[in-house]
Figure 1 (spheres, rainbow, N blue to C red):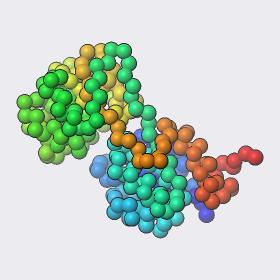
Figure 2 (figure 1 turned 90 degrees about the horizontal axis):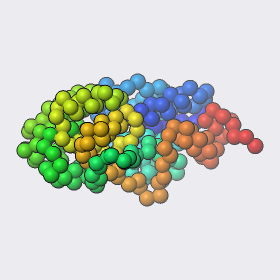
Figure 3 (figure 1 turned 90 degrees about the vertical axis):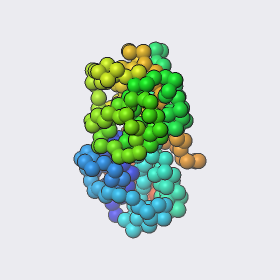
Figure 4 (figure 1 turned 45 degrees about the vertical axis):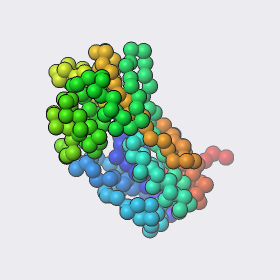
Length: 264
């Protein structure tokens, strides 16, 4: 039988991986999307939308669909999904590959304020500035809802829902964003402080460069840790390399080693 790979998706890297696997003869790929975005980007291969019903639901789905390997290519802050994937992989005996783009690193001139959580980011804001560019996603706005004395510019792919700050201006946009885009936004809205999660990647990194050029402080929410015993690879080629090895190890067979035989 053809090897079946489940990708827990929703990121640019997940779409790239799905396209790579779908192009390989004899490989079946299914991407699962959480369904939080009404108009996600196009994805190659099969696509399912919605939750699985926790660890047991995911494990049952893996067995019923005869999945051979799981790739968690969700957002670096999707900690619950990653934890469920790790537990379901252990329950079913399936290999799990976690794809995490490298986090951002500060460079000379940056004024970063690392914090462990959104609530800690909210606590730090009043002493850093009163006009805030908030780029932590529409689902995390509740942590800032009590800051009535600050003005927030919130960027989101889709309109956010309460609870959210009372003094808020919403900018609907989807990345990638250029340095010119970000510089203009920061200047036009007279931003004094930027808040971001350490998402990594190039699609939204220009805001950091723009903030550095303007001398603005940036509150950076650190990533949650991976589950115990779980390691990550940083890019799509790394996942493909791991899948080829895991395809042999999981009993998929040398003929179906994700599109290429291992040399002897």
